[in-house]
View 1 (tube, helix red, strand yellow):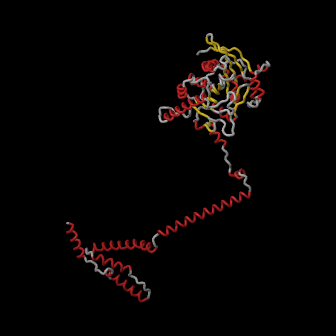
View 2 (view 1 turned 90 degrees about the vertical axis):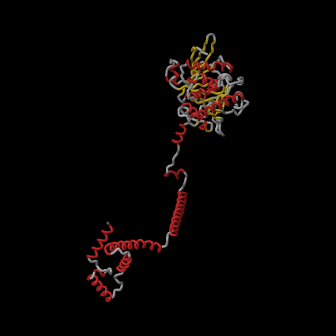
View 3 (view 1 turned 180 degrees about the horizontal axis):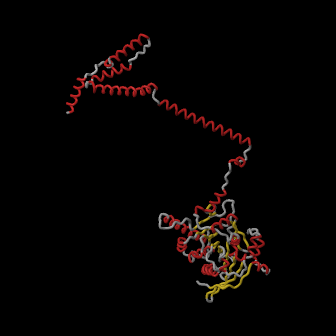
Length: 499
């Protein structure tokens, strides 16, 4: 459906107040319920500067009245003669979609988080049509084309979406038909369908294909109303809400399975996030993060400060989280991990005792216990060392055996030298091997040549024996010196044996 848009009029909420004509809803937002909605002086000033533009969407004779409410940063710093392209392209834009088809003024349901996001550098856009009114069928038929054509008329190229109730249906229709106008991250609170609709008003296969082909992630938050009988109360066990939840859960499971299979394929770029995240319960224990405030027959959504900060951080970053990163209903992204590392408190040793509130007496007792523990540790080490020494001594051989083993090599080495010396003598004197034993005995006698007796008579006897040996050298070994003829005969015999 192609619609042609025409701008009709422009005014602000302040202009309406100056005319002394303030509808009941605006009066409740600015005066009566401002404290319950967490709207302070600054938030009220922002609300008074909200622009209200009246448009007409035409196609032949078909005409739809369209009201565009917006909070724009360019409007606050320049004169309002800018065109829409100049106005909404200075900052990122958030499209807020309320429970269309079920309430009269769906734009007001998300006013509190919208003002908070405007204060954090976002332009906020509300689009509604009085012509479609509270007809769910007409909203599901024309709503997607109306939003798409209006964004094109405002020269908005990309938007993040914050929706609640039946507004989630329009988000999924935009995702299936025009994913190019959607940014990377979106938030949906208490997704639901009109009770009169029995089947899903969009093709779930196209939703799955759009999430698979584009870097888009949705954070679906749920919190049941405590008063189920109140008008507009939400319960996830209702058939309409359950149908939406089950369909998205199956899409999440299939996409997760595809991502795990693609991780083993090097030709496919890995995707490091889950396309759909679920927070099944926002209020954990006594901590209350979201609640509803009834204003003029409607229930407006109010978020706590921590939840709003997480939502802004989530919308500002590229998708990088998995379902396991949803802790106590809030998404924990990479920036949160870095913040925890930065804010981690490290106590210096010099101020550790001060932080632990230890006085002088407690520190002395602790020091005495540390010394006693150190002494016990040293005694244990000494006992272990003494036990190892005793084990080594028990395994070592006796001292006498060691001395005998040390003496054996020396005796053997001396005997070998004697044998070698006696063999050299035999090569000169004779080839008789019997002379080898005699030479060894004589060498042993040479070792004991000098007596241990130190008397004068023994000394004179030894001196006389030395004189005889110097006079006759052959007397040392008991053999006569070989003659020349004997040596010649030995040489002739050796030459004959060689030939």
